[in-house]
Length: 185
Image (cartoon, helix red, strand yellow):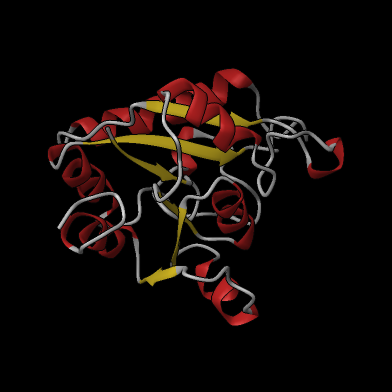
């Protein structure tokens, strides 16, 4: 099985320092929905792994998070794309859970649910914690410059072997068309 793991805010949709708290605030980054559809058309399953501490902070509830994700799924459907599985951590950083990136719990759950070893699986994010969670399970870290990506790049200390791409559309082109450890040429 071919699998790709994506972060949400800053990768698929615009991010906000005040969090994405409603469906109206969820706005796709140009080209991101088409890129996910291209992954699907190339035979990839797509898993989403997203920290959503706004829930534990009381900024929005599960009903609102579901409505945001419903909007995302509908928007993707207009391009023939889909997210095959959605994983989120509702905890704040000080909750010290294992599912909040950079810890690997969410990634390990993706591995279990898909019965897939994540070594070499492309994992796209815009923050160092996304990349660290990817590396913890042996996935291929890919940093996009959208969202927090530019700041992450400027800060440095990227994991060895991290791919740096302008956005999700470029990352998807590399995933699909470059020779990669997951057997595509």
